[in-house]
Length: 416
Ligand SMILES: Nc1ncnc2c1ncn2[C@@H]1O[C@H](COP(=O)(O)OP(=O)(O)OP(=O)(O)O)[C@@H](O)[C@H]1O
Ligand SMILES: [Mg+2]
Image 1: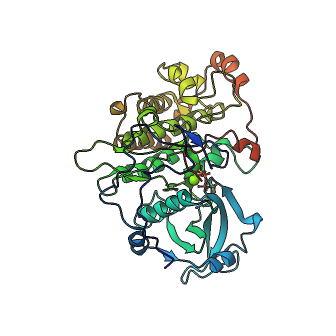
Image 2: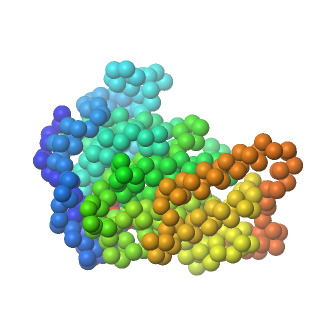
Image 3: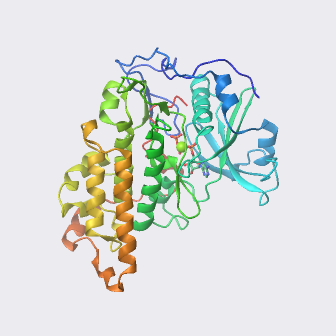
């Protein structure tokens, strides 16, 4: 097992490079936030923090050598890159199902290999947090960590391969491979992701995820959703405490307002991020999109007034979904998103409550499907008057190229 530094996991002490409230750092488009909350009791060590050795020893995963992962990805060939994040590049590789030894492409099982850019302590912390959490958890809505590599300066993570990639690509990329996700599939993905988050918040896991966003929701062949990226996850508050004080980390556009202003992190911060993602699914718009006209850059601010009015929600709904949803279904989701986005954290629902609402909606859709075909006439389209002038001119193609990544609401803090 690699070298154990004996370092304790805490994201308390500010990264040496961070200055001011939110210093931009790392992130593939530089929008991850890194900052110190003025009120964060950042130096305090969580009582249950494990040493690096303890984490690596207790992780229930395979330890890979660097040379094996080099072979599995054919020397990290550029054409095997699945995506890039602030942490580094993610490559597709192949390993034998039983021995987990590297094998020829197309044989054995496909894996996703994430290689950390060699970038110092913060990247290492996040790498270790990933091993810590994913090395213990096993849930159908969390991506499976197969193993890791810690060798000299190399830090890699090996995950199960998710054939349909991220929700981000399906919602925002244009191109023949990425057809717009249907309403039913969006609801399925929302439910799967909600279950993953509900598990993290459960008494069993007691974790605050802190980085809920579309690029961290990965999709299986059948569009089952799994959460990935636990680099920013934190143990939830223990005992009398209602929150954890931390450096402010996460992704612009997704972080809860009270967390941004105080550094106080609760599970309700995740619920806010869930609301943002729900709104992205509803609207097909990114949380932050500087390519949109003035007043529409921030999705939550722009959409909030429309969500409170029954007929106005059409202004928010993705035009590509027309004819696929029922009015009541769309209203349920809009109301749910609005509740998750409540300014007051206490007013936000729990993830269990969110799961229940999404399940009920799915059940009612199933029931409708099995009714007479006439039920299809209940599916709503946006009123002609609403769709014409108010929406079409606002839509802008984000394209499918690298430049579009620059408009992503990327990470607030990863000093990656
Ligand atoms: N297990 C996986 N299977 C398939 N594709 C994956 C897997 N993990 C990651 N990817 C792809 O690689 C991309 C980059 O992932 P990564 O988690 O490094 O960055 P990100 O989430 O896009 O951004 P950030 O660094 O801000 O979190 C993902 O968006 C996804 O398309
Ligand atoms: Mg990610």
